Amino acid sequence: MIWNILSLLVLMLDVTSAFVAPRCAVRNTMASTRLNNNSMDAAVRNLAVTGRIPWEKLLITKSQGRNILSIMREETHVYDVIIIFVLSFFSERIGKFLYKRFFHRFRDNVDYDDSITAQATEAVTEASRLAVLCYAIDAAEVALEVTGIKSKKVDMSRLIANLIYATWACLKA
Image 1 (cartoon, rainbow, N blue to C red):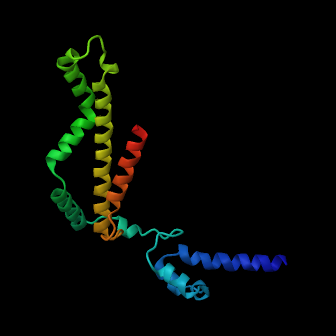
Image 2: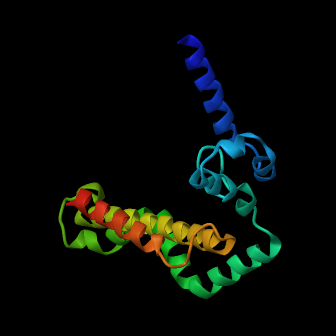
Image 3: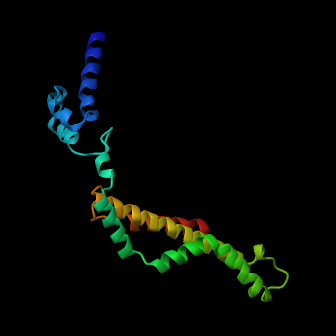
């Protein structure tokens, strides 16, 4: 009984080693003959399964880098990016300045931290930081599409952005 279990383990290790070995070695080993057709197809394809991460697709060539930059230049607007970054990093200072300069006249004896302006500034800061995150996700999606890892049929960045903003809105409510 022990010999049967050991021989089974050796066979299983021999079969699973075909998935970890490089593609050219998979075709030439005896272990590949023990694999069924579905397993053999999975071993030959570039799938990210059990040590089969397509590292060669993750390396971005110069032409792919130029293509990514050109797509990002076409899709993004400089003024949008500038406004989002300014609001995400300096909205607290802008809110304090506006409150001390203009809005404190409407409310007597109320500090900035207790004012509606501080709450609005906090919401604007959070929303703009989420926008920066969404821009980064868009850039990552463009890079994945150019390298061929992700297909252009599914717009994952829009789905992720909807999820991020909906979650944020629910947490703010």
